[in-house]
Image 1 (spheres, helix red, strand yellow):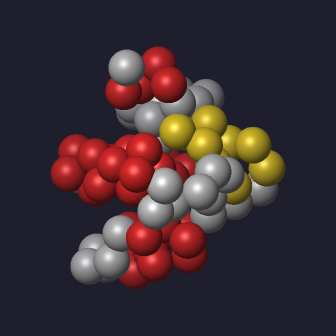
Image 2 (cartoon, rainbow, N blue to C red):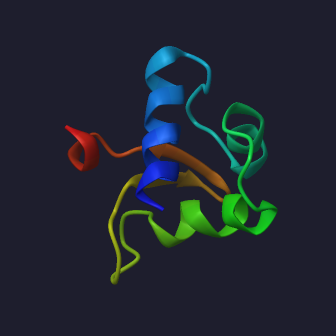
Length: 72
């Protein structure tokens, strides 16, 4: 899943994906992953999840930004 996170970060950096983003906008910017992945990945890797990497910051229900601390 590291590749998926890298795709999301690259899409944001290139301007292809605007922040804040939701699962459906990530799906359009980074196609090719299982549909369930888009809906589960963001929340699972959000700040405060307590058990995995904190790659994203939840700004509202279903909306996220990249976590600058997670990718330099």
